[in-house]
Length: 357
Length: 256
Image (cartoon, rainbow over all chains, first blue to last red; front, side, top):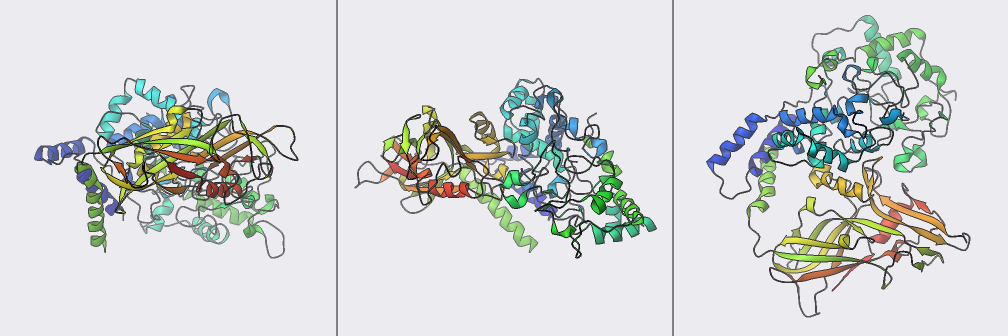
């Protein structure tokens, strides 16, 4: 399927390459030149991964588009204070989340109410942010750019800054083959950078693809336990069914965060948050939508002993006896954590192509 | 299967570009003027009106998004205005925003105009060309920045009712919330020619113009009755927002 997308992109490119009826050889050469100067990047879906949700044919990543997206991602000009870039809260060595603040940290030292999510495998996600407020990767950056407690800017003003910048006009022209800085090109570039963030080289991936990797006894026990205890929500290769659930966290009166209902207006969605992917979970602490739990041990302890009852609590946590919580012994928990560590992808964390410097 | 798929895609790709390559013959211009009314009278911001729920209301601010403009030819075929150029915010307080000039329309006789109320939330932002509309929506206050979504209509004012006797603010923001709550509506109105015996013609040298009336009173009194008192603050509202969108879908008409 991915190959097809590539070819489709190429066909569109060729067939739309000329606005002129006189389709001459010179123009054909021109297209080839453009391609060699700005080649398509090899965006491939790992064999163990689910289908893409992002329509790559509409925005096939190119070398220059990706580089532009990366520059934008790390540029503080996207924020009102000139400092808080996307990369300020999304740090590569932590799988593009951050550790220093429990919830996100924005301009003027303002603190948000939610924990910055890690960035990886976004081309496979249906919706974005903890409550699914954004349906499309291409428009998601509007949220952090404009949020007062994050980057506190306007899209229009960001575009003005980029137009006045000594470097961006040329970079946009190189990436898109003509002059002009506009919102679509900016968002497409950010998407191209983020699309390429595919984390698929963990020990777990290699095991799943049958690449002569063996799990230790602990890891294998943990894998089986994970399947039994966790995988109904943390389902599939990316460990998420992409649903929204109330997992029984006590309501934090400091934030009073009602979650998904803010997006849908439905009372059924009160206190529900997206089931996160567990990729690179070992290094994406703190955990939960508000970062209240510091370690994986804390997380598993919460699931056995910390869940509180509420109207929208996911029924999966209620045992036949009527009591709530998951059943896991201390030994089982440590095995599950050993398994979770197989989801760490050091190749991704160290991939220089995503690095700021 | 794959081969068929590819050939199909290639055909689509080629067909999609064909339009760019053929010159439109004697293209004309259509000037649309949006006029907001209450029943039959021109709306005045700040004036008092009464709805069927016996509520007296003023409108202090009124804006809405028009998109995806398509014209129907006399022979039933469609003239699709370039989608990425067909996003407009009509703002009652800004006379310029109420005049929309559509250029490069193929000469011919037309019977109807179809436009979207709001932004089609099911379409990909790149495909539908909405990303370049983001700055306009943002500057006019029609962007829900917290969800990267659009307000399709923004209607704000004050009201009194039998129970609320002191003038109180009300606020109606209807938009879409991702794929969950789709309040986008396609609206088709018949074009009105200058006289009943003639066709509505668009061509080079023809002054083709049309007034599109939006009867704002239908927001409250259409197929559904919306009492302001029932909920004076309608924003992310899975119950009332679709009712209002349905009301709005029959609130437009064309006139010469």
